[in-house]
Image (tube, rainbow, N blue to C red):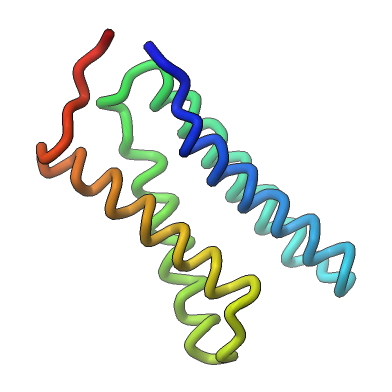
Length: 109
């Protein structure tokens, strides 16, 4: 069982983005959403580290977050932060979607 550094990094980026949104703009919703989604993704990263076949929480959360931030990016046209988070979420969905489709290995070591 190895540590899933990619998932932990993604969770950290989401949480940090929420904190940064609060610090720069005083946005309490950004802080709340960033910490909520970051915490859920952190737990999902823990689950993936324990069992690589347990990707459902991270895949679902990444899909929801990617959709929300993708719409926010399309409406605002600003890449930072919604475009970046949407892009990271899309990468996680592709990574875990490939795992769900059986294109990548989930064998335990």
